Image (tube, rainbow, N blue to C red; front, side, top):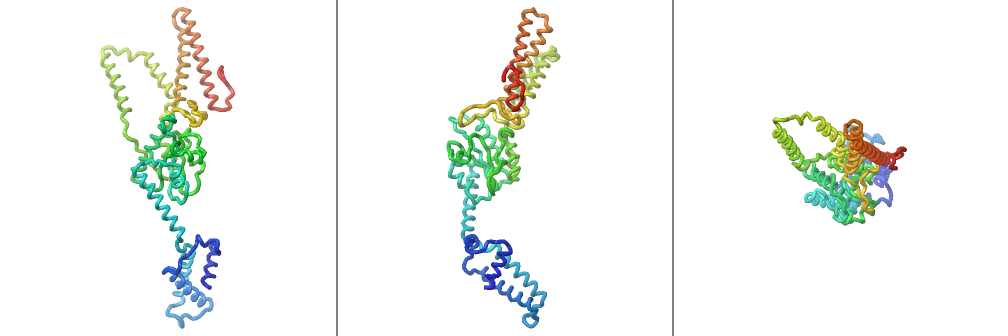
Length: 398
């Protein structure tokens, strides 16, 4: 009875649950070796407490001195608190541990075969949503079937595979995080459960708690490049993944081919290199470089945005991004062509004013130049207005 009162007092002071409503979580088995030592420690604690409180002379009762009794008293208290706080694992806890071990083992087995684990509705609910879970899962919701005609999904899947393989074959690979994918045609119920209305979408499911807003990857702003996904994962999980891309020889081959062509032309014209001093040729090359840089091609190279976006529900394809913080690859191509048209119009106007051609041809060049500048500048202004909401000005095209 004294031990039970002491146990209840310790639980009351430590804030642990008491009473019959918590017997399932804090249940103890019949007497074991640990519990026998617990009872012995409790009895020793009661005796020592009585001796200390009554100021009884210890020399007449035992061979220990008062300091030894105080040390033994403290050891008993620590032992009692440890056993009381943590107790002996219950059957429910053991079942959770076994279930968790089974889930981790299954995921590790699948990850050893494929870096990205394909999931349907049942696997997603059991391995990603249902507890217990001490691991994080990054899931790509996509639509890769040919009938979906999702070009962006295929591009994003290639980058996602590079990221997952970089983690799978890394020396730092652990069971702390796994990569999975849910295809719309294999897990449409998951899309409905997660209220997904677009693809691809990347989500991080943490080991504890529910996903937060930052656990959904901002694809339009950051793009789907593997390096950008790795930075996002590092922010959410503290897992640093070094992206290792397979060798791509297309770039060096194209550069070598271009240099070979230029070298061949220079060699064939080695006796007449006046073309190197042609101002129009250098002006055209500089203009091409300016158009490429001002259209956003470098941003595409860094961020890796999708070429366009297709709504899986309506099938509508968007080539212009609706935000000023992001863009599509197709959008940069459109802007490049519009800028080139405006530039061509300005060149025609300049030639119409300064050339020695017939007056009729100069009038035609002037009208064509004005038309190109006004029309395509109006179109550029409408795109700018669509991306920067609230911009009040427009020209011809609202």
